[in-house]
Image (cartoon, rainbow, N blue to C red; front, side, top):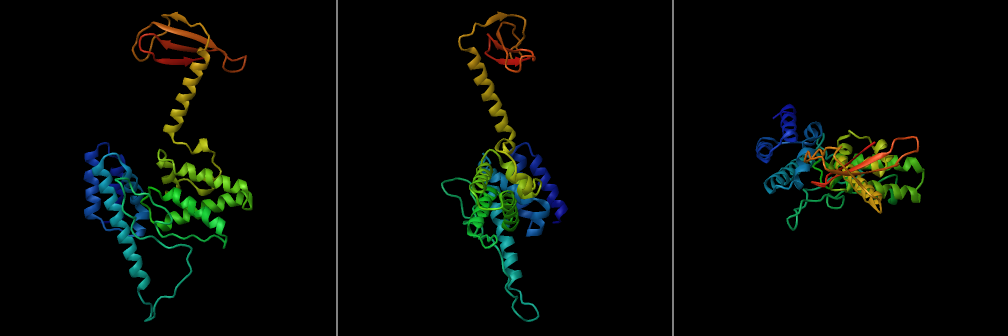
Length: 291
């Protein structure tokens, strides 16, 4: 089938809302599509399917793993055939490479989803003949590849570009350089933030922009929402210590629609700003604030 048809199925997979739909589309991808590296790059099918290897539904995750393994074997087989094909009756000349493309992803153990690494993929990166920079690039590779279905060459390109962007900020292998690499790696490995990895591997987020992002900027929206909730909880608790709350029926709870509430006010911003009102529903415990 063509790249257009593959893209259509990838879009359907990304927009699927039920596990039945996901399974049906995955079965089509497994049965009807034979891929190569160019087709995977163009369609971003590897990213879409690879993301589902850690899906909570076993049938979905198992199918995704099978497809990724099948596609990896097809890509590796095509590369092997291409590299061994003679040119003008002579074996092809060996050309220098900064990496070794991987064999199939090793099988999962203990029922857990596969976790790709540079070592597991057989990848060896060389950066300007410097072993420290090479190890840092491989660390970024580990972060990008951990749950990706993208070809290794594509991930290598992104990892090398990220390391280069970080190095250009410090112009030397300093403590700050190493600290930044570690920070990027930790955020990439965050299981709750697959969209960050996917955006870099796909090219949607440039290595240059990524290399300058703060930990807060790299957070997933879910993590930001959780942090906001924790801050609000802590603020409610800290303001409640030793303070007398007044009861009122002047506010209506958005959750249970009752009007029996307790409230207090505090100056949480500058003096010329209005006070913040903290309200707690007596009936259901729902809490909210406004200025």
